[in-house]
Image (cartoon, rainbow, N blue to C red; front, top):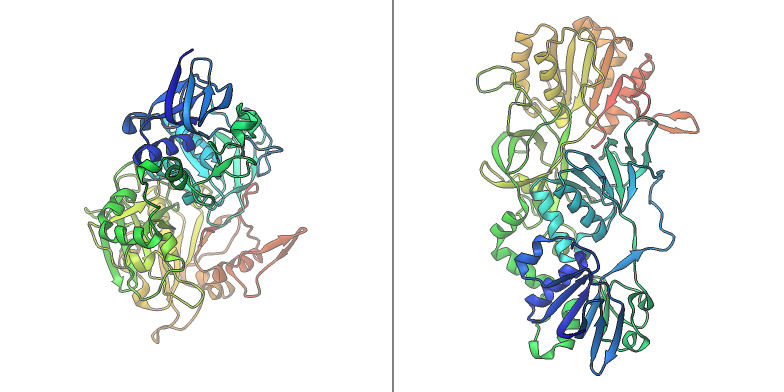
Length: 583
């Protein structure tokens, strides 16, 4: 068995191992070898891009000290290395899924489904292992959502962070950085349903759910390290908590750069640039940051007034298919200029990151020929957005930056359109459909009303919108045109701060039977569906404890409708009050 000399041997072709190899070579370490016990590495395209040297099927059997080097033995070779980095990890002791779930042939742990093409798959996990699974599923043709539940991208190995960014930019995966389901339910004969205790994330159905098991750093004995090798300081571990060996992590512990600088003094490796240095460099390369993160273009930016806009966005990749009422996410970088003088908290740390927010998809209502716009006929998505001003308790990040954008500017568009706030419950073409909204909450209702009219809905359709002033009604002219074309459609704007109309709220319409007086519409729960989007005070979502329903102190629409026999639409019990909850 021959002995092969190397500067650095990395054990493990996972995200951490590949990232370390790329960084080491970029800093000048000449001879780097990755030993992978299996037949593939996490991100194989990196091998050619960075000319990485990998040995497959090389399970390490022992690591011993030979003079000032380590002797790393595999069934094929003995490698003599100045340093060794062990990135292999094992499932954490006592690990179990972080949410309520029963494993089955569709709810898996660390296992890819046998068939991936066009399958909807949820990955649950917050580390680089979850990223590896997400990338593998996407490469196989699956539609992937990663529920990362608090993932900190800056603490991921660099190639895992880069891969997440690429998957998002190419709209091949949806990353829920803060959301985590609290239950995965698989009822008999049904696909797994993920229930999120998060008003911004709808409950979603998937073909498969894959948990990324939590990982722990290997103990020295598990790697074949002799006692002398473990105490020599020549062997490093990816992660923290290995007694008797130097450890490194990307952020929370000393990273690879200072370790390499100490091990290879002839390289004169410079220290890691400070946040201030990186920020100054980023200011000089804003277009590079935009190219790196943005995946769509703003095609239309129309101002109703200075603080209220209609914009359309066309993605570079992927389709724009959606159901009326659903929403998508938009994003801009913290590096973009603000229209106000507010200072974002922790701006230095967030400088290179995106600010993402969810917005309901609206509708232009009429196409360029004057026909009703079809949501499936356009390669753009329309949004209706209001500028959010800063307050002492809240410094909004996205809209003060969006206010400075114009047609042709680049933007981030989330990869997956989502939401259960759709017209699916409306099955009777003669039934009554009521839309109640405040401000830009009318956006999904615009799309839903157009869809009903396109399909020939014959029952009454009423869209009620509460705003402060007439100027806050960006679509009023188009709705008036709809009214003239369709006798069963009614648009009722309600400014609350104008002298030419009496001040009243949506709750007043219901309490006073105004809809019956104006349009002859009875609030009959047997034939009516009510859709609510906007200010939570208007909606009035109740809380239920021990079977007792408690409504908010301020009476909302839900309470008033419930008094008339209406019921809320729940996860497992359908009702006729439907609420958009991501506000």
